[in-house]
Picture 1: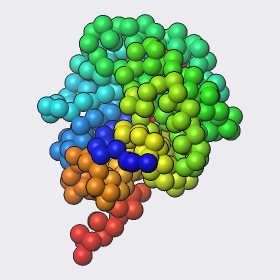
Picture 2 (picture 1 turned 180 degrees about the horizontal axis):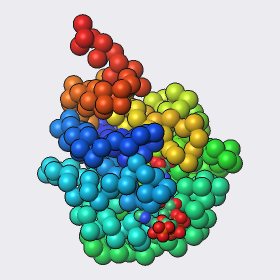
Picture 3 (picture 1 turned 135 degrees about the vertical axis):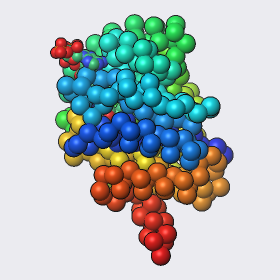
Picture 4 (picture 1 turned 180 degrees about the vertical axis):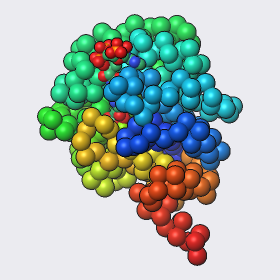
Length: 302
Ligand code: HMG
Ligand code: MG
């Protein structure tokens, strides 16, 4: 099996990471972080979520933030959108790419967006139609692809069915979320194999949280199948407010380091990425969870 030569990193720290902070991070800090990530060569930075501020107060500054991002050419700044109201706000704020999100688990879907999986598709159909008609790109997320905090095991066939529905709806890419990070490499591979029977591999992305320390191993396993888009979070920030105990996504520094070591292209400048990790970690007053960031920062400190 061969690994992809070029791997695209989708940075989700400003959204998936910061949505889970106990305190609210000021918009200025988020903007600086986003700019540092772009400067480090990341070309897709999920920046915020147009969700209800009652549900996720950390993303309440979505409109202000989206309007104030200083766009760099060649960089996309997508945002999560859960419904028509979210799309309306995203469009007003000048958002050019959205991500809709559902789950492979009914219980998680209910906790996260307060509807069944079928209802989520009813909600998303007009959202995607309008977004595409307005020239936006639409990504789709599936949570709980390798396990659910409420239902336990999730069948690969269920994930494959939801993925097919998102693809048919018009999502250019389906991001497969191991929300609680319980997956292991062979399970991750089986899940991707099942999904790839319904949706071509080039339209799939891996979104693995690192709660059980399996994310890098799982990523390697699915890259061997041809997965070439990886979601990750600077400094390993994050979790999910509706998955108790879930920790952050795999750290972008760890992914970038592993890929560079294997001679894969990502376009990421590791030194500048570490600067971004140090910046947000200093603000949050805790070290990055990334071992790579910790090692490089310790070396820098001499
Ligand atoms: P609901 O309560 O069923 O919605 O929530 P509603 O339509 O009844 O509205 C309730 C109130 O929210 C109303 O305000 C609406 O106006 C307002 P009120 O009249 O009570 O003052 N509202 C909104 N406000 C702003 N923007 C909106 C919006 N929609 C309604 N878009 C809803 C349904 C979907 C809104 C809610 O459940 C929600 O916002 N959920 C978001 C949860 C979330 O953000 N979760 C984390 C992101 S997903 C994730 O992390 C997983 C992922 O990383 C992949 C993985 O790792 O698995 C993507
Ligand atoms: Mg996530």
